[in-house]
Image (tube, rainbow over all chains, first blue to last red; front, side, top):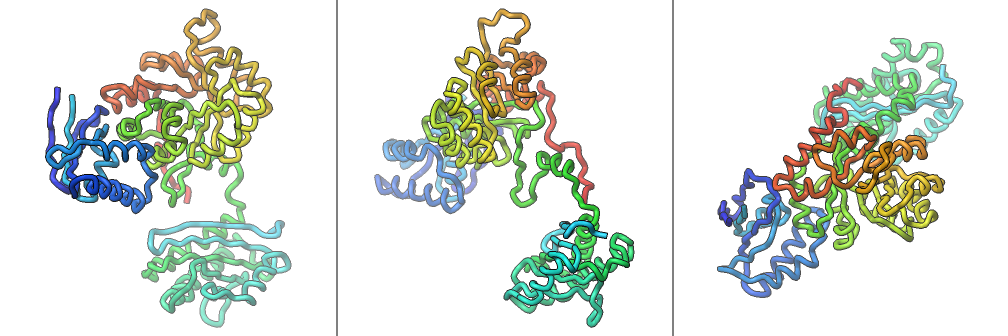
Amino acid sequence: MFVEFVVILPGKAKASDKESVFHKKLKLKLKAKGKEGRIAFLKDYLDYTIRNNRTLPPDFPTFVREIMGLDTRSGFIHIRIWHENSELVEFAKERKYEFRIDHYD
Amino acid sequence: MIDEDFLIGEALVGEEPEIAHIDLIIGKKSGPVGGAFTNTIAQTKEGHTPILGVIRPNLPVKPATLIVPKVTIRSLEDAEKMFGPAQSAVSKAVADIVEEGVISKDSVEELAVIVSVFIHPRGRDYQRIYRYNYAATKLALKRAMNKFPCIDKVLEEKDKSMHAIIGFRINNLKKPPYLEVALDIPDWRRVEGIIRSLPRSDTMIIEAGTPLIKRYGVEVVQKIHQLRPETVVLADLKTLDTGNLEARMAGDATADVIGFSGLAPIKTMERFIDECKKVGALSLMDTINVQDPVAVLKKLKSKPDIIELHRAIDVEQTEESEWGNIDKIKKVCNNKVLVAVAGGIRVNKVKKALKSGADILVVGRSITCAKDVTGAARAFLQEMGVEEIDQYRVMTDF
């Protein structure tokens, strides 16, 4: 069963009480359209990890391919995540992306 | 009074930003301390000008005391703190130590003290600078004269203490049992979700499983440490060749424990174990498909820190547990080894595994594939009945 449980506006993200490790969708609106928008998003993510002195996500090469290949739905790309507080969500909050998280039961 | 060339004392007292940190040496004027004293006073360095300890202007303290600023003095404001409250505090502390009899009056002409003083540039409160530096100097001198700490204290504390600056404790697994959560899922974002859901505990080890490492490289260990700096992370390399090279790679990626295969050539295993010692990691021998782990261990000149045993489904001998003869393995390693057991560990088997002598319980899907990862891990920890390092110690040792 699919439950859309929370809608979050930029900078207002709130973790669910559920800490379960089921896969979820981070629906994130790119700041620019098309291929350039995706490249800008990836550059922004890289910039975020470097400026916060974080180790690059080990799946970054896969992530790049994934982002470049994802469909856009009403301006949003749907990224698979497994935790409401994942690094991607932290990034989306800090860099003020419009996003929401869909949860599956 | 002092038989050695010199004695060393250290103390940290107070609260930030005026916190005082004193390092000092005390010894005979005729020995190396006297030499260092004269050299330091004769060869000043910019920003680190040494000054004599004085009770008041024109009244130097005895034993002769040289105060050396640790932090470079960049302004008159910094200089005033050092030449005012800090100088006064150190000198008063030295005099009081003599009055209290810790240093005998008869020996003051023979001795010299060099005190290295730290004052944070943001420290402003003269009362606090004075009091903290007085207390720290006194404590450091007492400690020096009493040769504090004894080596037993150092050896006990090295595995319990946490350094204030790094903010986490390097856990070298001295107090079993431990719960090892094996992350064999080769999907980083899922692994990240699992790690974020695991409860924080000193008794937990996170294993970067072989499939995870094969997919993302050994750097995945560093990413796990970014999420859990305080947790022991095991890199399960299952190395079969180039032992020292692979151990070094995992050590460079910040692994706390590094695993090799018990099927590797003896030379490879020995090089692996030695390299682990060099990089400060523990070595783990995985016994998958090893027919006789005891025979392999007997051949090794240096033994691994951990042996991982896997469930032998067909075991019929009554004297062995389903994971093998743990006692025999410990004996061949002079009881200086931890035994990890893997395979089929459920909450209801925890007691049995511990009773059979296991020190580390390796659990994979029972936790990582549970609908409630947090709850599943907590159930194991609760059944193991473990407590955190130093959970019940009240720190009164200042």
